[in-house]
Image 1: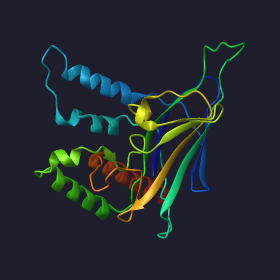
Image 2 (image 1 turned 120 degrees about the horizontal axis):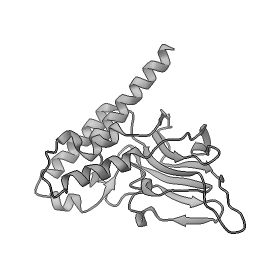
Image 3 (image 1 turned 180 degrees about the vertical axis):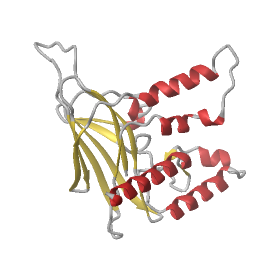
Length: 235
């Protein structure tokens, strides 16, 4: 599991608590971190759609931009009992830092949930999923396969919704272009219900056989965690 926030701190850093099921696995302050991903992608599309023809490399593609401009990342290897068929992920954000007074507010601490990836920690499984996906995408059933936007591992794109604690409101993530684009300046819970299909815990999807995921980013996070793990073991 990989988690990353961008945060514009007003006076004090918000607190994040990550729960897997009913178990608290981490609690930390969200430090100041610029939203470099959004700006980098905006610059990329401004460049390719510019009236002045400019050369564009494959290395400038948005998924690689995310790799270069990600916020501070936190990695978690979570051991889950094979008997578990359903699992709830919840990230509680304690963020009530503002200058609200008499109905007016001009400053507050704002966060964006930029990255939340949840994937099996097994490169062989990931590679097999990639092979099956590529086979379907390159077949005559391509249009049928692409008719479902089932993103398996990026929970900000699929499955994660937010519940504002103060107002007790639920918001369907399908109504948001991308959860990571929304600035939040209040106490909130991010929640995702995972269900086991084909031996993998995944967010709710329609016709799970028509899945998609970004191999480059998932592989990048996988390798990044291995580096983090090796550094931790050497200390």
